[in-house]
Length: 259
Ligand code: ADP
Ligand code: MG
Image (tube, rainbow, N blue to C red):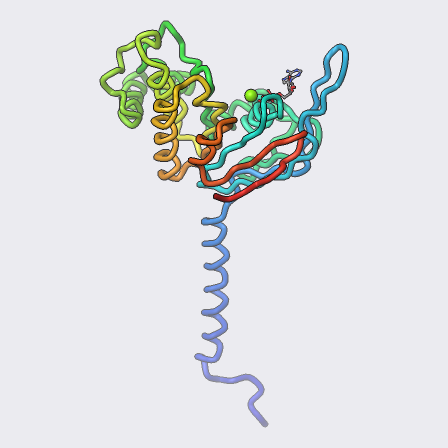
């Protein structure tokens, strides 16, 4: 009888090893190439008493973990509308939105808040600091809502203020800080719950160009630490400091370029 199956074990070992290697390869590509978010055919309209305004008309977009992107477009082009949907602050009408592989659709208030608390950090044009709380208390606030104990809150707040270069200003109130400093406090507050994704809506819109660059430098550092950062802006100089520009026009993504 001829030998139908090779008896030599090393013959099979080749298959086993290559199979294991292929598994490992799939695993590593999934680690290094995970989508932070993905939207498919996203639509959003606002209906008022008089008319319906179709603001987002079928957007498709993927942003990977660790990217630093800007969203550009003229005033009224739907930048904030899109960012509010990405931040689960507002609903969309049609399409799909996946955040960190979770379908974000028709969530209860409670689930939406959970995703926001665990995954997202927000930065706004107008800083949105509480005027009657000092810098440290403002930064610590998200941890207060997460019922973290006072001592841990305070230590963490100082650590994050230090990261944005404002440890010495911990006891100052917002009206004792410059615009740039207030925005850095707001960034520290966004970072304190260790989100995966930072969403910033015109974060430099109220700042002069020197101060804007300081703020962008902090976003760059935050991104270098592995966080995904999305900055909405209408300023070319700001967008040019990110790795990819997404342009909104007439309700669709007009272009989507890596720099
Ligand atoms: P951008 O941030 O690019 O300036 P927005 O997303 O804020 O644009 O707004 C897009 C369009 O939708 C604008 O015409 C705006 O007036 C309109 N809009 C935004 N929010 C609402 C709302 N809550 N109700 C009705 N219309 C709205
Ligand atoms: Mg806006």
